[in-house]
Image (cartoon, rainbow, N blue to C red; front, side, top):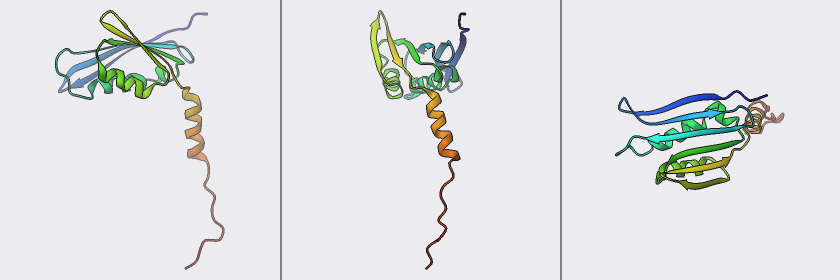
Length: 132
């Protein structure tokens, strides 16, 4: 049976105008998430492209995916740097005026389980507190 894909649109705004946007498609747990990132031409406040990458990578559909494929403008160093910071095992290659980045994503389930265990594990109490 074919997987149902989830399509999402993400925008980053600066002074009430959209400066960067992404179209994201995910296939569900263990599948491949695909994103197409673009930014307004001209000067964009530093960090806005990185914010777009963070917004895409923080989508639940992307977090539960095993693989990620991202297309973004060739020469967009801020986007590339943020993708490399957030994704292990990154492979990038040019394709015309775009760059294509492929990555394997870490499983979100073990990370979530580890955080839940840390948060719910009771700390040992000292039955004999030190006295002054």
